[in-house]
Picture 1 (cartoon, rainbow, N blue to C red):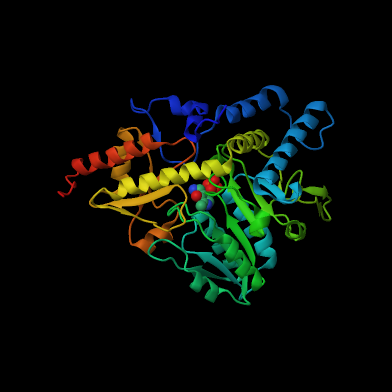
Picture 2 (tube, rainbow, N blue to C red):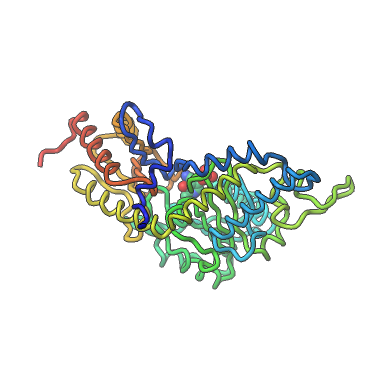
Length: 412
Ligand code: PMP
């Protein structure tokens, strides 16, 4: 029997069957969060029904069982990212917490006055603000790689920024505001040549293409489960084990210590050193189910499907007069960011919503991108495995309707 087409897996997502505003839902806000297949919803609720207990140090059977499930989930994340060892995976609340972990632990221990952190002009706020906070304390400076008009990084400028003072490069794998897929492998190579460490923000990458941290050679890789069909409140940081072993704790509490005394305490080995307190156990188990789910379909198949849809959608919106795409790099993931003459992105989003089309409008937590393009925000449609041509048709029809309402449909 042949595999169903990728978009046919939409039937595994119960929420997609509910009408919204009396219409078939065209959910195109996957960059913000994806929906969850039955397998993920079921894995989380089964954990609470059958396996719930606090993990680690438990003497009773359920605690050991829950610990096993949680550690198996870590192994699944290792597999997803192609890491060498499961203890290189730290569970976090998501990408934001993973980046803050690196900033507050590695950053505070390693950044000195005069050091430089290289960011890019297309970072999400979560890969800018933690570095500003830590750089301010350390006396380090932030340098920024500029963007081209098509929304690509200027690699010549990047190379020129790198030097003996560069301590860290933090770069987004796939831009949530532009869709650009950055040449991170090459960027990591160049950064390593000057002795810098590299953190990759994989929030928009892991659900849309296969990722292999060892092939990339990155030092840190961060992602969120909820953008990968998994639960909210769970994500992970990959960090090379030599780095993790040398890093101090950033949050103190239960589970991250070896011994505690008022005279001084000692720390557990990684990854426990970085997982203070009771973690999101059910979330980790739900994330493992999400990883199994995408693995069964195949991330390369998902990538190919989304790419075809992106090409179809790009051609369709380019035919709309008065519409301008923001982000036209040759290497793009399934994200369409655009502005329409005379219609504020928020108004467009509201009109599309009335048509059952869910998009995002605004700065997408990437204000420097908006500043670079001289716009207050964009409308953004972002694809997932369950989207198909019908969603694109609904989007295009909705934009046409908005233009008519605003009297902005130019005559051809
Ligand atoms: N980085 C990028 C590129 C993102 O798109 C997002 C989410 N929009 C984040 C980081 C932050 O992810 P989270 O809110 O799940 O921590």
